[in-house]
Length: 342
Image (cartoon, rainbow, N blue to C red; front, side, top):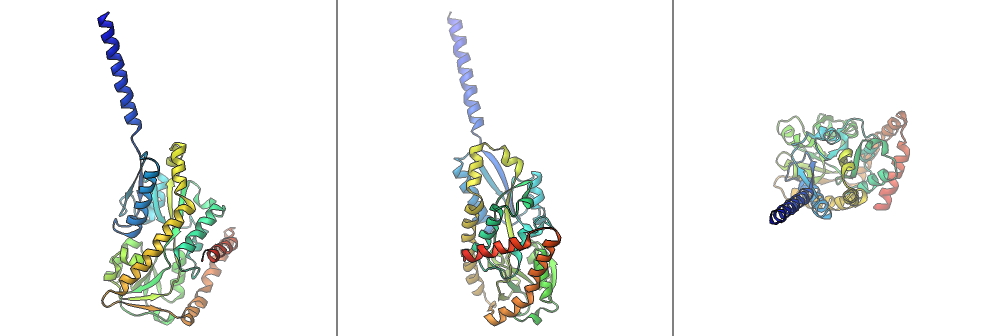
């Protein structure tokens, strides 16, 4: 009888240990690898993506563990889309213009002189997605949210550039097809260089300048290789935070809701507020650098550039029409949202 009681006690203890072990195992957080090509110190990596990851982790009660992998360790800039779609990363932050012709309608954000702020451009992109204009472009991935940077200025290494004729003979970095068209119409030569390669390309003389928001000049330490800054608010570039669709679908429903609650306008409005505020701060930093000069174009000068670059938009509309895409509708809706947001 005593032996039976001991055996029962041991059996109960073993079952209890097994149950506790199972609970501990079940409590292990689900890790999500978030890839970015930006260096760890850069603003988007350290202040936007890291903060987003922290919020998701907190909102999930610790059941999700989003970890940022910065510096392109999970894929070079043009590979971020394929990386997340193929499951190398679970989430990836990418420039849509790096990915060939996959996002033609999303490239509306790259058109010249639409708006000066990330706030307005970002809200227009997430509105387009929410209203179904961009569904086909994001098939096969979970689109967490889109955003832009603050409007792009032009930064040069050797000469002050204010007039269209000043661009002749210059080589400028471009992140997208549309920016390439803009630079060509200005009379310069476009060179496709991913953002992290800009410093070296300018240092070696492969580039004479680059379009960038002020924040990117700081993020990629371009204050060392630029001196002259032309404030023109010329264009922008669409970014997206994408998630592997299978990974998202594998999450329990309540954790999907955590991701969803930090997606779309919730993500975009929050991120763009940080981006616009930081760009203003970085403008002050750059203006204080010894030997640096910021030239702000006046209304008459801007009018000259707007007239010169108007064909870029016309050509984009024609290209969308040739592909059977509603470029007119997308541009109209973009302008409506930007006007309302501004």
